[in-house]
Image (cartoon, rainbow, N blue to C red):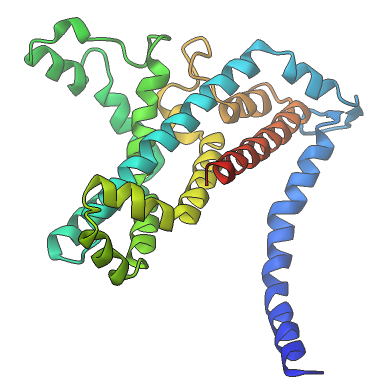
Length: 290
């Protein structure tokens, strides 16, 4: 066996434990969930094979499509909220001074705070009687803007998008800082000589050179947004009247509230399929853009 063959064999052997763990804890549960999606099962007792009835019921349920629309709002808020903010902050905080390290730590801090705590904090911020947001609006003479932010179906999805954006900027900030720091200093010096400063530096140099990192960040945004559950569940529980229902909360409520494990498995499989479609679609659009 040649040296290259030995190296490939060594890499394959080294990857086997990781691939085995990934298959056992990720791939097998996905396949198992898709399998139970074809059954009427209460979680205990016998299961009854019903074919595609669970999938057909989910696709014919208006609440499912409302949850899907709400999830698209979260996806859009994540992509057009988290990523631009993280990109701008990464340009400002890419140096390593004490102040910049402190701000980077502050921006990343929500990631180490439990989602339950974040949901409770923002729930109090939005509270119609004791919430600080309505209090500040009243103090600044903007009493006409006071709302029941989480109870008004016309605005509550946009209200819950704010904490989702705020809580998840940190990882993308770190990702973009690492990518920008890999840009050669010679490129930056040449761009400055050519007059590419400020916004030109961002759009003409930074974005093209970290384009692959941006694509990865968008994939993470889409997959993370479709799994969004904890913040929404703590703040609204999917209500009122399912107006903030997401696919994950819809699946949870149908699985653990009414004990329809087969139906919940079908919904979780549909979430995976929708995520795959959105990810592949985004990558296709970005490849055309590039």
